[in-house]
Amino acid sequence: MNLKEQFNSMEMNDILLMCIHQEQQAIELYTLAKNQAKHENSRQKFQELIDMETVHKVALQNFEIEHYIDLPPADLKITDYLIEPVLSGNMTAQEIIILAARREGKTAKMYQDLADHFATEKELNTFFQMMADEELRHKHDLETEYENEFLQEG
Amino acid sequence: MNRERPISFNTVPMKERLTIQRQSMPEQDPNIRNCNFLEVNLGLTPAQAVLEAQRCIECKKPTCMDGCPVNIKIPDFIQLICNQDFLGAAQKIKEDNSLPAICGRVCPQESQCEEVCVMGRRFEPVAIGRLERFVADYAMNHGNGAIDLFQKPEPSGQKVAIVGSGPAGLAVASDLAKEGHDVTVFEALHEFGGVLVYGIPEFRLPKSILRKEVATLEAVGVTFVKNFIVGRTMTIQELMNEEDFDAVFLGLGAGLPRFMNIPGENLNGVYSANEFLTRSNLMRGYDFPEWDTPLYRAKHAIIVGGGNTAMDAVRTAKRLGAEEASIVYRRSEEEMPARNEEIHHAKEEGVKFMNLVNPIEFIGDDQGSVVAARCLRMELGEPDESGRRRPVPMQDSEFIMDVDMVVIAVGNGSNPLISQTTPEIETNKWGNIVADEDGRTSMDGVFAGGDIVSGGATVILAMGAGRKAAIAMNQYLKAKVGSFA
Picture: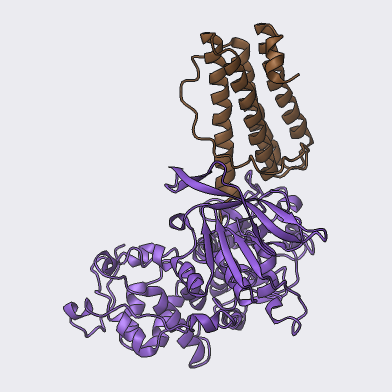
């Protein structure tokens, strides 16, 4: 069953729970990686990601849409073609950003699908569109960080 | 900057100075030099140097010094050239810059001292970099071979360890030796110079120049130790506690190559710029089998990146015999970080530029060797924080091109060895050492500067950071003596 078919068979509350679960999973993964990380720099980076995902989870729990008002910036697609690293405590800063940006991209796609699914239900459509935009914004921020640090082309 | 104006030796009337053309640097012919590793630029003649110096309009408030990260007294040395006192001019530069022959060759003067030269507002700026190179070379080749840096001072009785013999380390060594400290430079490789020796090709910076600069420092008492990896051979704590060094400067540079993380980067024939250039520059792979290190001689080489390292790599590939050596860069030429001179020289030598192109995969044959690159065409979108327009992939623009060698030149990171073996030294999330403006780290008596702190930057910026750290280290050492007394 693909995501769209899955949405058809779910109640709104279940969909929200699924999204919260998705964010929670990310928090747990990054927490695991932070606890396993051998270097303080990696632990810091994982904590930043945990904080980011926690904001998403709270937004879903409160179903708050007025928080997000800006349009998302252009998708730079920098990490779309890169090899997705496996989550571990030994990850380099470069791998952490790639992994996080790719996750944000996939989650943005999920929320966009949900927004499209609820195209005729204004409140839900707006909420999921905002969530998709928020994920894209984070992907953009991560890719900007990636570009500044790892694509100096010097 | 308020300072006393130097004595004028320029006899050319002011109006006439504006009519003198900026002196071109004689160069090897592009079609000859792209087959050899001899230096491209041949240097100004004495007559050209005097003529160029006479272009200086002796501004009441000169701005050129502000553009130099080590504040060389540019108006002063230019006047000494007008007086044909070339050794005096070299001595004047050496007051602030211990590596003038190197900086005269590799500094991006067009974005530093020459960018703010007042002449440049209406005419071409005075060729300060070419003049610096001229007097430094003159001083090396005349008199005692190297001008006397300074009178040997009274020994302070304090020992300083410098980790890394790149531009930052050499600047610190020079300044602290002047203060009478017992300076030892530890180098991990078998030649001194750091990035100057492994990163910059012979055709841009001959190794003989570097060796002479190092010899000058040795002559004034600096000890150089090679094949010594701080963090492996001995830790910083051991240097301080067992070898009695009173202070340590970390100038390790940014020598850890970065890859793109796209499929196929582990194929044979795909190099980091670091490996490719180190094989050629440090190990003299271009002279194989005369020298032991082999270096792949490609037919169709692509170099990914748009900085000076990419230009050095592509020009090296061309000299090694590539029929086609191309720069593949995901932005346009306008956004390229490489010096204009390097881009110009590369084009003259037959290098092809494929701008707004980004590789997304390298494809191998059944032997595991790279045979092609899958690429996307890019277009420029909105500007980023630095003002450079950002490239975004064009839809349905994928294409494949045949290649038999790829060099990745997208940047370097810091070596994690020191942070792993000395956890007392704070590093940032990218692994760079955290140091204050004067180079102080979180560990007492340990200072740092250059690329290991700032990330990849220029030679002169590293030297500037080294000089600042040297001042702070000297104060630290004096205070240490005071506290014992």
